[in-house]
Amino acid sequence: MTRMISTTALLIGIAAPALADKAGVLETYSNIAQATYEDSLLKARDLKGAVDALLANPGPETLGAARTAWLQARVPYQQSEAFRFGNPIVDDWEGKVNAWPLDEGLIDYVDASYGGPSDENDYAALNVVATLVFTLSGQEVDATLITPALLADTLHEADAVEANVATGYHAIEFLLWGQDLNGTAHGAGNRPWTDYAEAEACTNGNCDRRGAYLSAATDLLISDLQYMTAQWAADGAARDALMADPDAGIVAMLTGMGSLSYGEQAGERMKLGVMLNDPEEEHDCFSDNTHNSHFYDGMGIRNVYFGEYVRADGSTVSGESLSSLVAEVAPEVDAELRANLNQTMVELGQIKAAAEAGFSYDQMLERGNKAGEELILSAVDALVTQTRSIERAVTALGLDQIGFEGSDSLDNPNAVFQ
Image 1: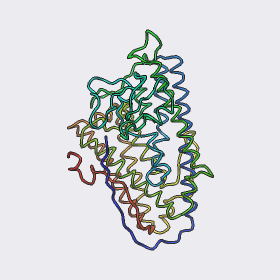
Image 2 (image 1 turned 30 degrees about the horizontal axis):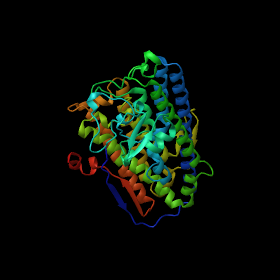
Image 3 (image 1 turned 60 degrees about the vertical axis):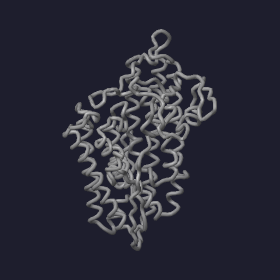
Image 4 (image 1 turned 120 degrees about the horizontal axis):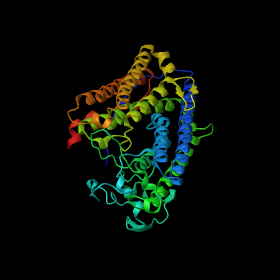
């Protein structure tokens, strides 16, 4: 489906103060980006090992281990989303690894209730796993071999339809969990391990091709993360672009923070789901991991401002921070923003704790579920409040213009239902 995104422009014209440590702040930011993507890469390699074990010896234990590896891989990656919106190299790449929502019928079998091709997407139920040859945009495609190139170059966003997501975390998630058919009741997808079994034990057909797709998608995720990790290395293009103009680099940092905080997370990922009462609006909808995705998105924003990231191995990357930069010129703004970022983590933590105690995000989205609505909207309010503090930080730093992504769910709610 196509997302309706508006842009909220902040036009600010104040002479920029001369701050000597901008380069140090940008270096910390780049170091955190490099470490976050490297952790994502390492966890993706762990996921690949678990997938290989599943395909070599299908069973409930190996499927469970692969699911656990996927969940662990999401922790560092979600924290990396704070590097979106302000860095073109990241923005141009991100759709390969984290695009959602997806028409999962493109990839594999789906329940009859899913439907078939639609006016918006002719390939919504293509089922590549079960289809050796098909016609795409008027061209015959030989899919006898399911390879990373087939997924990335032919299937992903096929026919320029954004819902044709063939690669990345969510394609892998669907292949591990299957559809979540529980609606707003408790429960995630429940794909049987026998979907990867051999010969007569195979369920739902094409187990070998399903395994080939899962393996190719995981290989592709690794190569994509290798690419982005390299962009933030000492001589990487993303780091060089950021450091070339310190003022533009600080703008990139704040743009990522504000856009993820406001339009993307508070709006498209959280309030929209409450407005529509639709579990399909969950970010990690097959695995019921949305509470963690929201939590670590919030953590990523906080990491950028505080200039500190705790790596997967427990070590810390830290240095000169955006917080220290703001505190030099407006200590009261810095104190407010730090407090609001911390409060957001409290609110997101309450969603996470509730979900881990058995009150899943699906249930929170149910129409009339006041407790769930209160949990989600309290976090939305906190994200909006922290965005206003980010705007004040922009003013304090005297930056000329920043565009934060918006969302109809926040800016024009009536449009959501039109």
